[in-house]
Image 1 (cartoon, helix red, strand yellow):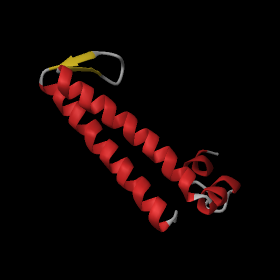
Image 2 (cartoon, helix red, strand yellow):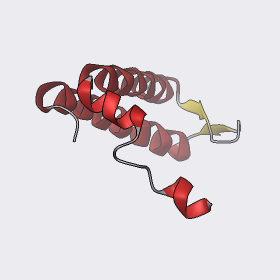
Image 3 (cartoon, helix red, strand yellow):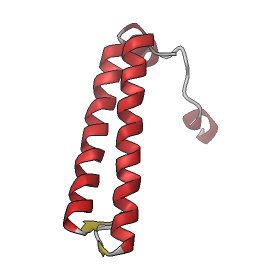
Image 4 (cartoon, one colour):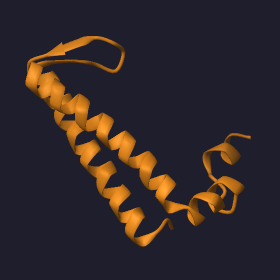
Length: 89
């Protein structure tokens, strides 16, 4: 059962629908990217941020986590632009 869950079916109904409507996939990626950008910028400006399990991070670890969030947000937005222009898959 687990290998079936790990490998997504390329021709499933959801994937076919997303392939036909790439702007929906693009919009989802933009929302995720903007959220990551927001939390990355607020973490860099305040100097502290929340970690994965709710711990408050400060100093160098907060900066590192915020930079990773910024890079992830930029990557998600670039993916959204690519999907909007060229389509999905």
